[in-house]
Image 1 (cartoon, each protein chain N blue to C red):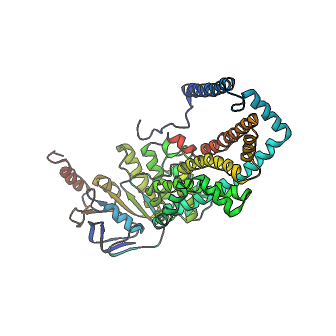
Image 2 (cartoon, rainbow over the protein chains, first blue to last red):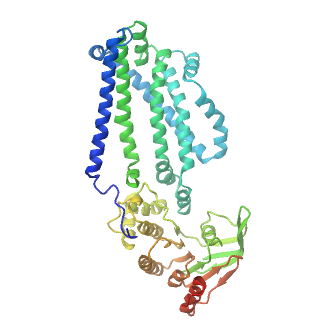
Image 3 (cartoon, one colour):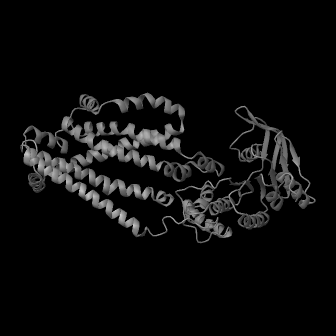
Amino acid sequence: MDSTTPRKGLRSAAGPRASVARRTRLLYAAAGVAAILVGWQLLSLVVSPVFVASPAETARALARLAWEGTLWTQLLITLKRLVIGLAIGAGVGLILGVLAGLEPRLRSFLEPLRWVGMTMPAIIIIALAMLWFGLGDFTVIFMVAAIVVPTMYVNTVAGVLALDRRLVEMGGVYHFPRKLFLTEVYMPGIASPVMAGLTLSTGIAVRAVVLGEVLGAMDGIGHAFSRAMSYLETSELFAWIVVLLALMAVVEFGVLRPLKRRVMRWRKVAE
Amino acid sequence: MITFEHVSKAFDSLKVLDDLSLHIAADQIVGVVGPSGVGKTTILKLITGIVLPDAGTVRVAEGSVGYVFQEPRLLPWRTALDNVAAPLRAQGLDKKEARSAAARWLERVELDGFEHYHPAELSGGMAQRVSIARALAAEPRILLMDEPFSNMDVTLKGSLIAILQGIIKERQTTAVYVTHELTEALQLADRIVELTPDHRLRELDLSDRGAVAREWLATTLGGLKV
């Protein structure tokens, strides 16, 4: 390749080999899902239905919850808390992370708080939240946000510190105003670790919201799960597990991955 | 246009420039040559103000500065067009106007058709041409170039030097061109100063550029007859 020949990245077709590889991966993934379902079914045949509901019983419970409207009501409550808590936690973590990444003194100042935030078990955070705020929306949202902030913060700081300083110097030479620095250098430059942080935070947030609702709320999927467990309504319990997994799947495959693809599409070219 | 008065600069304990004095008049193209590590890049950074002298003063006339770095330093997440447009947006142009001007500059460096390519899709030489277009798009009063052709083959280098020379003369830009390749400086510069490892500055006599080139080649190639 001479010095005038462009490297063909995104512009060239993916090629039949890439499509075959992708189809093969999907096939294996589908086989994995099938294996889980088969394993689940087999387990339900040998274990008492008090402990393990079968896929069929779970599906029936799911249908009933959907028909009654309970599924949608609780799902919306949990989704609301998840989205608000995640937005606040990710937003605070991102802003603090960018500032701390740029300012070593602030980073040192926040380090003990970062350590406390990452070390504190979730159960302690919900207990404190319940003590301070009682039961309800605010408690759960607070818990989700408090758990998400350290993860987003750590990833954002790492992103800022890893940013190519030569690009920052280039912006300085051309007197980029602050807004242009943010939009053209910093935000795209830290997008990859921030997206990784967001993906991690979302998983943590879903677990946190369910835990928060089990202990600190009178509604939501977590509370419904807890109630089903108390009454040994195992098929309903399993139905709520499926709802939770479906929620995570929608968030990850329907929101996070497309967002990551959009934000990181230039990376595909580089690879 | 640019004046260094008794400028000294050290990084940690390593002295890079020592009592340097240099004046560059407006519209001149000055080549700064010397081996690696003598402070050539430091001179450029002092002109931009991103590095400040430890002693002495650097005076630079008002006006925008364009900088062609040794490596392209393109934003990997932006297209060639948006990379060239960035300094124009920094100057206050809106995105549409900046992109329109950027497209014209990409054409000047013979990269029309590659506006929407990302840096990873471009060869090293093409990426450096985008960097040159970016520096020129700002219509700088002062153009600084730090070994801009170090990753290029001879043919491309020759054609780019010709393009640059044309644009610099047309726009009456003051240019400072840093290189360790004297032959490049001889093609482009009106004046050439040499920085030596013992921090001395020597102005080269360019009345016979051929002789200067032969002398340099002889020194560089050792005992080979030229």
